[in-house]
Image (cartoon, rainbow, N blue to C red):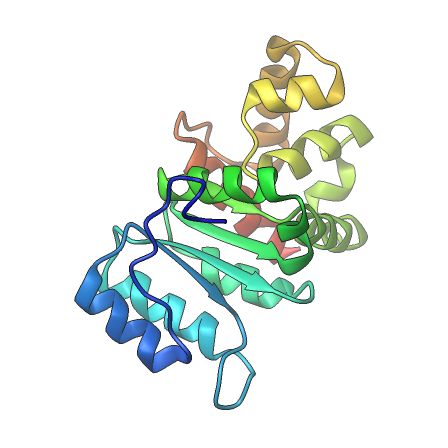
Length: 198
């Protein structure tokens, strides 16, 4: 599937150690890994992804998970400026979207599973945070922003103009006391970091 989509698969790893060795030897543009890897099947893949990003900051990483784990998403996204993805395995069934997410991350973008974003937004709504004070539409826009969607994509999804999305985003930034930044990756990271505080 990856080969047919234009990716050159340069290595396959059975465990986190093999993964890190393969990355050091091959220096790929993109790494796709499961959160759980042998020998313990806990968070070895996530920890390997974090070490890979620390050692090779230019290597994009997509981590796949069976379940929504907010903590894992926050660990992976904290302090990184793009080239990061956290997707649920069930998303692979939508092959076109999965491949689009991989390309987006490989190009320096961020792809966060909508279910992960929903859990984070719901948690922030329940908390005593500024997210709970946002309008329903602003919360929708915030969720789509956190997924890494562009203004054009948000506009199409919500049947709005791009100008309306920009206005909603500006109000969200003001409500959350976040500086407006033209870099979409920082936008996503800022939103997710804020949601983590909720």
